[in-house]
Length: 357
Image (cartoon, rainbow, N blue to C red; front, side, top):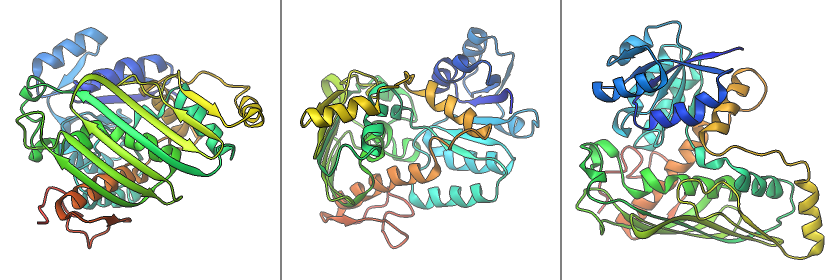
């Protein structure tokens, strides 16, 4: 399929998409345009990467038939309308998390995608790196055995200056707090390895910053495979770390503790015995390095567009992650356990910001 042309919309995290996602694949992608309402940032990023076309008009990019991919890196509150518009314009779409602010919104996007010639790839870059991908291969090979328990910790630090950005910390524009903007990554990683949840009990609170949205949360999950999982997250940790520890019948996995690259090695892979260790060694004997984060996700996206592999992250994946968010918010409001799937009968389906008390 050759080189795909890309327009970046939003030059904050969009800059990381360029550095990690597109520049390492210069033979596959070319960023031909950038869009941002902040003209100073637009100029800075454009100058840094030699991108001549700079605009403040999203509509202008949609009308340009020479652009193959619209990469949406704008504040979460406008993702829904921009994704739907880009799909309607016939573009392939990449969208940062959270995809939108409700399950109803995700379902609207899924319907739009069915009618569109292009595809949507949500961003879940933390799935990539040698550590998590080795664990995934071992589990998929059937070596790990029955899943027992797991713990997931997103212990990050966000101070008042982080929330000085006007759209952050507000329900209307950020759509949520630590569950939506930060821990969503690790929770997706956990489900990528352990499958979907079946029942959820959760609590959320705002304890660290003077903001509207939550910055502390915890949840207890019963997974479809019978495993128990505990989630714990805060934006008030004086030492930042991200950690997954997953216990299976034949092996225990523990991620690296790097807060923003937990998919990278070193991961602990603790085999139950020598026989299991030998099976693991055999299944990863031909291992080829997996670049972390956007580098591998974008590379696999191009492979998909070229007909050489599956779409690495799908709208179904994004929905599953946001369904968990919805269930935790609903449980925290009601004080009751929430069964999954969460559908239109849920008081949080149309908008998880709606109070249920």
